[in-house]
Image 1 (tube, one colour):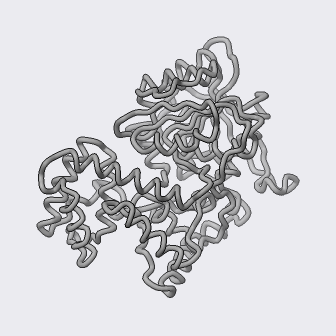
Image 2 (image 1 turned 30 degrees about the vertical axis):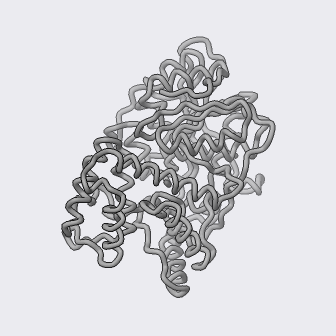
Image 3 (image 1 turned 90 degrees about the horizontal axis):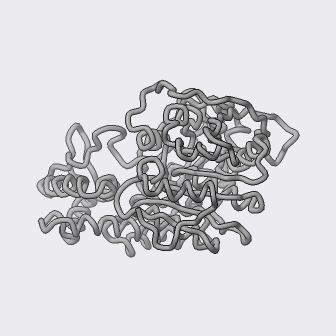
Amino acid sequence: MITHLALTLALLNPAPSPSPAPTEKMEISEVSVPVDWDRPEGRAITLKVGRLPATGKAEGSVLIAYGGPGAPGILLTETMPQMWAELRKRMNIVTWDTRGYGKQVQGTSTALPCTWTRVPIPAFPEDDADFARLSDLNRGLAEPCRSSDPELFANMSSADHARDMEAIRKAIGEPELTFYGASYAGFYGQAYARLFPGKVRAMVLDGTWNHSAADWNRELELTALQNEQAMGRYFASCEREACRPAFWQKLVAKADRSPIPAGAGLAYDGRDLQGLAQSFVRQGPKGWSALAEAVTKAARGDASGFVPARGLRFPDAANGVTECTDWPRFAGRKDMAATVARLNRIAPNVGTAGTMATATLNCVGWPAGVTNPPAPLPKGLPPLVGAGAWGESDAVARVLAQVPGSGLVRHEGPGHTLYPSNECARGHLNRYLTALVVPAPGTTC
């Protein structure tokens, strides 16, 4: 569920090179902001802000963010100006490189000297001693990054990015914020709506999830149920034995008893298979066919069909500098065990896979607190608009349900975010961002 920079780049720019050649240079300026917004007179850092001026008469500016967290807004916009061509007829396009994310991800704002990596999601600790060891392991992994700049490390949440957005709004002279947030940047938008509800003009949340839940345990359950529904599409996709829920559950149980070899010294347990299966089912028919083949082979003792073609070979998560400040983490093993048992019960085919219950295991013991936990949106917001493919549209709908008059553009198919590749959705979102026309109930693209 946690997104990351590599995924964002791949989705928005299908074949990114280490240094994509800009096709249109942005106008670049700088905005100075406090590293710690609770200490506005303290140390300042610099945000690089880019603008593509409107090609017609400008009616205002749209601030855009691509998620990641840490996706380089300036570079991505310079290499994909055509994506915003229609919107630019009436609006300036403004973006920025988020605080902390530096040269490794081609960001140009004040950087936190870190090595941005993904790490395999650890096993659930079996006892309190294992839980303590996991806490120390995570703390040790974070410490080189934290020690390079403890103050910036502690102020990297989506709420900090949202406060930066407010500073940018003021700097560009807009009386209210018009915002498009893709993927993880949808959490920046939700934080902004909580912090500055009176300054929101329009906000699109595209391909994101619910960071505005009043009941976090219930939100975990709903995410698990969405993943179970995704697995159900696979089960309905064919009549082979490999597509039967009972066959799948038997395979997972077998792998839990004795991990199944996958070649090159690899072996997958049941939770690994559940997690890796998520990447197949999210692809739709192409992925369903590949999963059926992988399941058939694994049942014969060869799980190599589950090995990802690139990247890490086990279900993984980001290093957490932003994520670990945004999401609740387990306080202890008892809390963890109760949550795992509950999710396994309500989603027997996927369990905790693809939920924050697994993704935040890397945050146990993290040397920065949860400074921006999920919380409901305030009353009085103007209508918001969400967009998303399978699963994402359901999650963002739970955000929009808190704001009367909001609208949703749904794509009944695979994918992540709609604006970059779905012309129908882009038209609806542009009409909202320019003229505040909210898509009608039941809008699909």
